[in-house]
Length: 241
Image 1 (cartoon, rainbow, N blue to C red):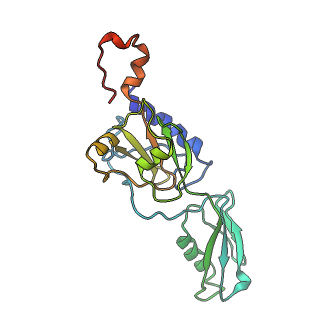
Image 2: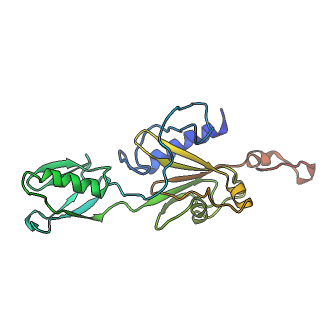
Image 3: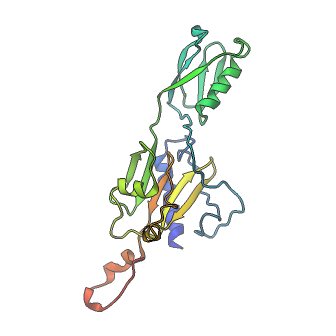
């Protein structure tokens, strides 16, 4: 089996382990791994369509257990603090329950305004997150300190590798993978040649991370065979990249 297919199979398990059961958004949903062909040639399965790796502003989507305040400036008797329940719903005073898991604050604001339309005319509603999952990224594979890290500011792929302790001696710098969940059924994959990028002094391919992204650094070919070389004096010239 192709070594990259094996890597993808292992990463599918990592995605499931790193994600709280049943959550959506970021890398939280435990769905089958799908890869679009225009982004990579890894694996034999070909997909003719699918989402594209997205860059740009990120809007936080609520998860189970998140808590937020709902304020009605002109009708404060409806002010309330709610928590997203395990089923993804919240209970609202006087109007019942609504599903909010996976939605952004503007989407929830519009939804709540609609729910209260029968009680309040053109209600002014302000939502403030109180307790929510902090943005993070995951670094795995051949980095010095694999793990889950807080995403506190704008961070690129190479910066994420540095935060995770940098490349190890058996890292394959020419193939660094970024996994990003773009829907419940799709995980988009982007391969970056960090070695060539640094050689050309061109950081245009240095992708900016979004919360929930996973950076995976595979091993080079040399690291898989070097234990079988009995002596450095054999005159064998092996290029690890």
